[in-house]
Length: 266
Image: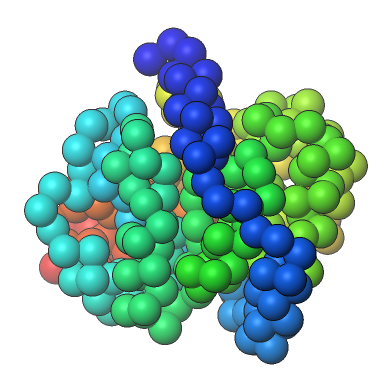
């Protein structure tokens, strides 16, 4: 699993080289259209003293291989909604996660919940593309882009009425994100270089995050005990993927994570 991030980025850069570029008029039209849309993802990012679950859809991952299998993403959306998820995350990276923007469009078209696009964003065309396909939020990984580019990407997201969720894993990532103006930080408990996971990473970085910045804990959250542990330290937003995707009853699993049912009571 070593150097998997480098492999992902190499493939992403190769794909982006073949992307059609937008002209100025096309960009201005996208900006104009998105400004008129109310962004509900921004609203759920406000703290309200309960666990807010961003439930993920992804076909595969480098660490797990195929995950979704033949299951219909639309049916999974129904389970997530019934369970009480606050938002949906969609992984669109093509080579290693088997995603694509058509999956993003399908999810956006079949849920009333706000949708976060997760990908490896390296160029502004991906941000405009996310706006066109209806994403309410977009993951920006601090580690893979310069501070100047990250700042520009955050500003472009805000111009397009998209919430930029800036992902960090190390202290220098966090410093870069805060200096670039990030208001919403995703602390990834998974090291993208080795794919090793520890939820202690959220607590390790949390002490450096200003109170006015919203924190989302990402990856490695498996049960209600993990939720309570992180909430005891002030974390209220959780992005959860494999724990839901691998559970035979995702709706019930979300209810368990939210503390609405007890383990063994269903």
